[in-house]
Amino acid sequence: MVPLDSAAATELVMRLMAVPGKSCEEGLIAEEVSRSLQQAGVSREWITFDQAHLRTRVRGQVGNMIVHIPGTKPGPTVLFSAHLDTVPICVGCKPQRVGEMIQSADPTTGLGADNRAGVAAIIAATSELKRSQVPHLPLVLCFFVQEEIGLQGSRHLDRDQLGPIDLAVNFDGGNVEKLTVGATGGERMSVDIRGIPSHAGIAPEAGVNASSIASLAIADLLREGWIGRVERREGSGTSNVGVVQGGEATNVVMPQLTIRAEARSHDSVMRRAIVAAFERAFSSAVEQVCAIDGRRGEVHFSSHVDYDSFRLDEGAPSVAAARASLLAIGRHPFAEVAGGGLDANWLFRHGIHAVTLGCGQRQVHTTEEKLDLADFLDACRVVIDLATR
Image (tube, one colour):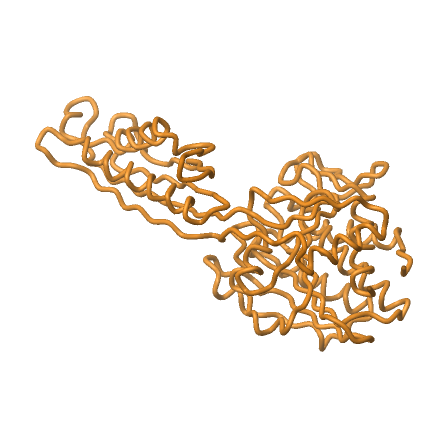
């Protein structure tokens, strides 16, 4: 196997983690990735961007970066992907090495190893391939934007710009030995409850409190087993009421309240059943609360699918190839199905069956985030092995 310059790979990942680039603001990190790839020997002409950021819910600075590297030997075309953006807590990160871990020197920030480690693993491996001039397969690199806010970059990927793909490996958080072969589907709900305002001390009976409607609906969902971990005859999944916002004063019967919630399941039919239960509960609750004159409030319910579930056969070509590469570097791969969404969810919908590997990220999305260097360096080696196998 092509030897890996561990020191150079470590310096690269630390440099990338220090570049700000939260979701929708990936312009600076995209420039740094492009510069790093060109320094590694990738022609500027091979680097392109799609227009995904113009189709996402929130307009971003740049689209997905797509890099076509011609093969120097015949064989299947291999896609390596990772996402560029980090969660906001990682902006301002100051990476420092502590033994065999990297963490932020600033205790108020996260590290951004999710997913700059995946990006760095792909670039470091590409650099070694170019430096060694070892024959390699045709490669496509894809760096997604807006992953952390609902997989928006991969959802709006220009599939045609990728071209034909035979094998696909996506890098994200976790252990490098873990082969993520499937993931849950997720749907977000928004509930706008309109009550009727009234003075809470003089004439509370003349109003309809939006919080009363919300409370009845949530209590009903909890009683019927539709909140939290959902286990029913119809199937299983999860749901959560994550945001409740409403009211401005204690002396006014609350006139408006907004709820944001989510439903997840590996079964899309079950996910839709959870969403339908939420809609029924709020529709029923609004009928149970009225003012003294008989007037009632209103509920406006909407939902949208962030990503649908998928599952790969453990013998699928990408899974088998990644497993073989992990074994070749002395690792012990195991397959799992994720409880959250991945860019691989949308790649699957685009007709690309990608297996997802971690890069050693630990405690992501927190100020305690760390990167395990042994896992990260082995992720680099997996890319090299797959590209030259």
